[in-house]
Length: 277
Image (cartoon, rainbow, N blue to C red; front, side, top):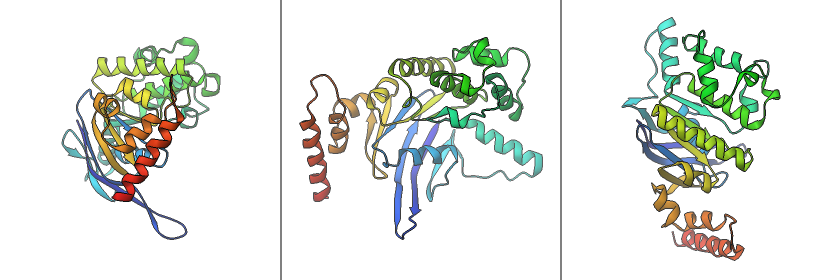
């Protein structure tokens, strides 16, 4: 379904020099599959997410969906070009960390979904909007509420409904539950699992929360300073990691019986590995 091959993105720094936010990042996601991209802040995972949906253009590399290169621009003109661009946008939809800033504060939930449906030429009448709201667990009261009248979890449910409105093949979720309480996180993750099972949509889950990634993904890509240091089945990568950096990430997560000294030793092992390299 989704193939990212050699994605590379370098930014020029204001004071001179450059920063490689992504360096030869490659992975695949099958139909209905789920991939996690993990790493510390600044590892490049959000840059990769933005390249997948087209918010950033890679300096090198390709993103293909069902064998079609997303970098290829429509050759049609006028109305046909716009239709082709919208069709391309429907392939991959993104759900951001903070739904409050990605939702129009003037629109109710119902109006938000109607706008998305109308933009992509879908029927805005009948039960379509009600069905979308019901799928994400929002009722009549929430349908007539504006973003500031909804809780954080309800806003994220609305953002997911808006993404699903255009029947995407892939959902990219960038820290989509990071700002939510643990109990609400669990509800949203369960919702995403049900949507994936029901629709066959593929998920790309960008997160620093390893517990979340372990819960919802089949495959995991670990990034550090723009590069992939480890990837493979989630159970193996997070259960028996081979790279010192992955072991550091796991050792840094507080849990019952956790010893901060383990994280310090893991950091020293990463530093030693970098020095040798």
